[in-house]
Length: 101
Image 1 (cartoon, rainbow, N blue to C red):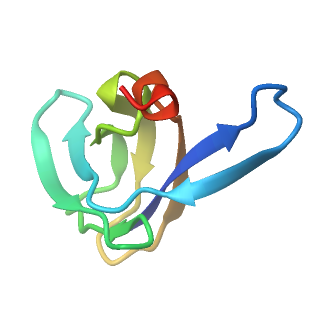
Image 2 (cartoon, one colour):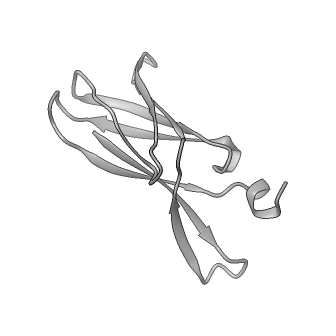
């Protein structure tokens, strides 16, 4: 499965927005029982490809300093083995990144 980690960035008015890929973000996949399945890091464009053994519900946890609160967690449905899934995970840019802190 391929995950595309993107940051949504808007100007102060909220009228002009764009998105950025998040390079070198850590992505961890967990089963619904919180058992860790696999992990990886995004490439320069914000994408990571990970393999799972079984289809079913789970979670993806993405961590990176540019992401609001340092992490984003989402529910995800894993495809069957050798199945394909491409999903984009959106996160907000952290306030520290906006203010230079």
